[in-house]
Length: 156
Image (tube, one colour):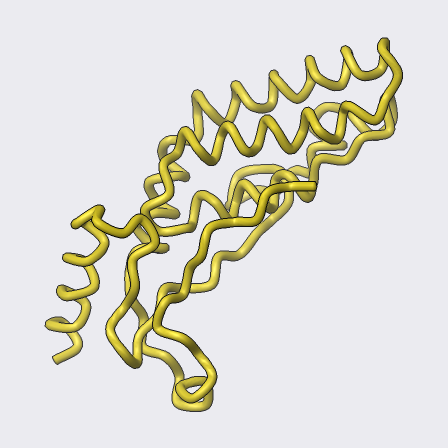
């Protein structure tokens, strides 16, 4: 029976008629975890990776966490995740004066290109996990909706 329900969920995900597919009653998509800025196996905060906070006072961790959530959202196109990621970082950079803003946006674009070029494996992994329906634990059955994922809100 579980295999049948998982198959039904997989069919719903593959159909693309609803990019935020739903699971059958009693099942849900997993809740996406975030790890700051870095690969899932070795999280490296962006401020350490690029020295951003030291030089320009910008921390992209919330953008990275939003990016992680986007990767794990079933049916979300990778391109959309990357574009939202760059926009979030650029928005953070826009608070600086001209020199710092240019430097910050250069670092943001570099980080964006890294995840755009090398993020296919992690994206595919997150989509595979994010599009798999899981049985809802008994203590959560009453309070959990069957549509587990909704589009991410726009970054401030």
